[in-house]
Length: 217
Image (cartoon, rainbow, N blue to C red; front, top):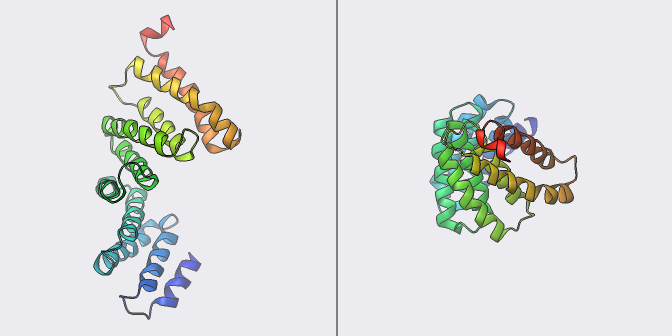
C-alpha cells in the first residue's frame, strides 16, 4: 500500500491525459484492493473512467482496468455489479481475440467464478465445458489454465447444483482422475492445484454416494 501511495504521489502533478498518471492511479487501486477494498473502489472507478476517456483505443488496458474493478466489487460482495463487468470483459475478449486465446480462456474462468457466486450454476457449467475444449486444444492438457478449468468445472458440478445427475458427476470424476496424475507430475504433491484435485476426488466420491445408482458401481 505504501508503494502504491508513493507511486501515485510521484505522478499526481501530471495532467490527467498522461498515461503514467493513469497507470499510477491503477497501481494505487490494486495495492488497496485486498487490504482496504472500500478505499480502493473509488480509485479503481476513477482509473477505469480515465482509461475509457483517453485510451479507448487500447482494449487490453481497458479490459485490465475492468477486471480489477470487478474483483473489487466481488471483494465488497457487490456480486451483481461484478458480474456485469465480468460479462462485458469476456464478450470483449471473444470479439478482440476469439475463443481460442489464453486471455479469453482466463476471462471465461473469471466469469464462471462470478456466475458461481451469484448461483447461475448451469450457465457456468455450459461455459466451462466449451472453455475446456478450447483450452485443451489451444493450451494443451497439461497447461495450468486448462487444469484450473477442469477443477472449477468439477467443483461447480458437485456443488449445490440441483440439475447435476449421477452420470454427469461420474463423468467429471473420470475427468479429474484423468488429469490428477498430470497435475501431480507437473506441479508436485505440495502444489495448491494438486491438493485441490486430491480434495475433489474425495468430494466427488462422497457426492456419488448420495445417489441410489451408486449401489451398482
